[in-house]
Amino acid sequence: MKIKEITFENQLYAFVCSLNDVNKGLEFLSDDSDFIQLGTWNYEKNFSTVPHYHLEHDKPSNLTQEVVLVHKGSVKCRLFTKEGNYVDEVDINEGELIVQIYGVHEYIMNEDSIVLEIKNGPYYGPEIDRKRIEVVDKPS
Figure 1 (tube, rainbow, N blue to C red):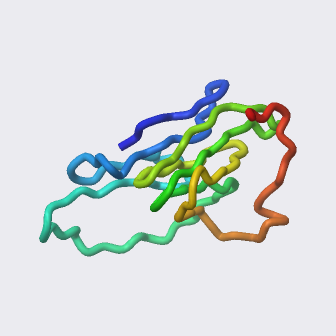
Figure 2: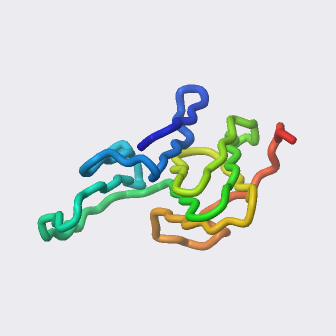
């Protein structure tokens, strides 16, 4: 279930979800237009989905979006504009995840942590796929 949305100047930067309280059935948490599609399943034993496969389509993706799921521990995520201005920060705890839609992000391990990171691909390497910045106003 979605527990927080982080926006700045009418732009969605990220949203946080908890897997500790999931609604019954299938629930998509992302918008249809997001490059990362995120949904939860909560089904009873012996439930079966209908066998299916996904059709091939040209789906241009000009932006990498990522999901960071904290399996163990706690991680602080700080969000900034592309110009380096501070937007917000949030702690992601066990069983929670953050979906990065836009902007700059920084992760700080609050404690020893095991994290699963998921991104849309393909990946072209750090020189092409990302840009490191100096932040203007970083909280202490």
